[in-house]
Length: 124
Image 1 (cartoon, rainbow, N blue to C red):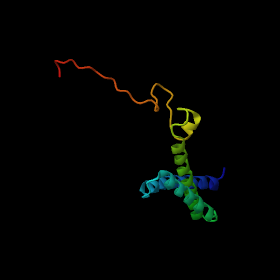
Image 2 (tube, helix red, strand yellow):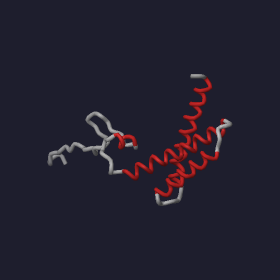
Image 3 (cartoon, rainbow, N blue to C red):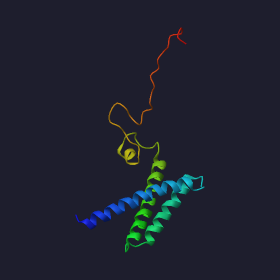
Image 4 (tube, rainbow, N blue to C red):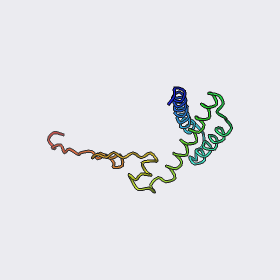
């Protein structure tokens, strides 16, 4: 582990985080109604941008990492939408696609049920 290696990792982390954030913003703002088409275009755009860049300068590394992150983020969302409802609730694939499961009495997968308190008629 070198100082340069740590710096490169931090730059990649920041670039990929920014790419993922930008990907979600762009997906939200694109005026395309079909989510699959919208995500597909972002995936292809991310792949094309990443493939057209080399890693010879810090700027190109940042841009390539961000482009890869756009493609990865949108691929994850596309897969999640494609398999939604087809996976076992709480299974490893379900969790891997972004459906968290809490391992105590409260479960993200179980709808919250409010306790109903009956009020005597003379109060209301």
